[in-house]
Length: 167
Image 1 (tube, one colour):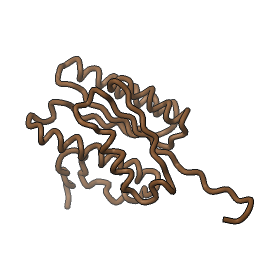
Image 2 (image 1 turned 45 degrees about the horizontal axis):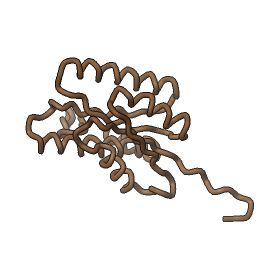
Image 3 (image 1 turned 60 degrees about the vertical axis):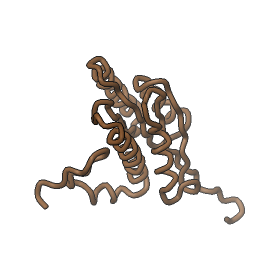
């Protein structure tokens, strides 16, 4: 690099997960991001953990405003009870509000405890959804054409893709 020129600033991707989730969603998301081109050179990951999904919005907002993240992946697991579903809805509204307040994408990644009865299937949903949304965050910043190529294809995170209505 020529004398007097600055190296380009690395982009920061935030990952915030919870202690309440029954699977380490943050580890899956961080592993996926570490496998993306440019990890460590073009971008770094800033990770935080909060107690539960109702704490994700403020943590994501802080990752943006205090840690300079350009996008955040917010991972959590609502439980099975009706109150858990209501709280998940309210937490999702908080995440949406944090996006609007910061003009920065926050990808909400919830895996509901009752999405599968079989623990192995549920584990697969946790892993798949966490990784795919981490990859989506990377694509949003560095390869948006990857998302455009998949538009209208019934792509799903967590379970098998639904596929397009018209092949």
